[in-house]
Length: 201
Image 1 (cartoon, rainbow, N blue to C red):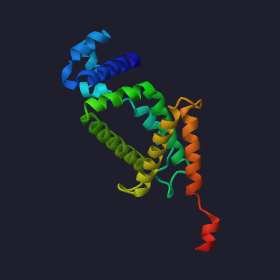
Image 2 (image 1 turned 120 degrees about the vertical axis):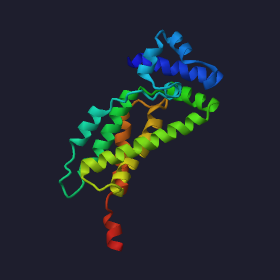
Image 3 (image 1 turned 45 degrees about the horizontal axis):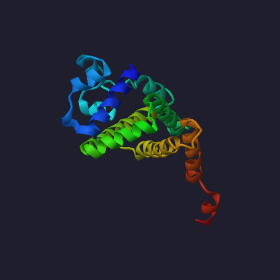
Image 4 (image 1 turned 30 degrees about the vertical axis):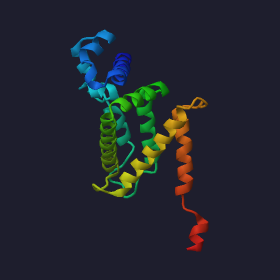
């Protein structure tokens, strides 16, 4: 199923780059992949979603349940493993996404032909970020709007983006988890209390 979905997305991106979204039909994509229209809509809710690789049903529940199990909402402090668990969640999502340098080039070419798709994916990123913030609030027993939840999610998302760019370079030989772990370790050093600064204050 994952291979078929990836093929649908690749063909939809190529056709978008060549003709624009209005220049081809769902039926044409189905014919090239060798699936029915009904099967297409089992994978993607629309032609736009196929180009962006947004599945009709995002099966993220297992990963979220595992993440939630790492916290204790009744605790008075934040979980000591919060950032590590958020990073692990990011790694698991990355491993399931099958993102490659080629797929990035394909979607960027589609964006050039159809700029509105870029706006659509930014909106999705914002929704996903808010969903993760609420996930952290639930896990940690924080009130809605607690900036610590947003800060944790935004930090890991920023590190994940940088790790993705490094991972996809031709010279990289490390796993995505290793690349992200290095960046998280560097962030911890910056965020850790500095005794010298405390003595000066």
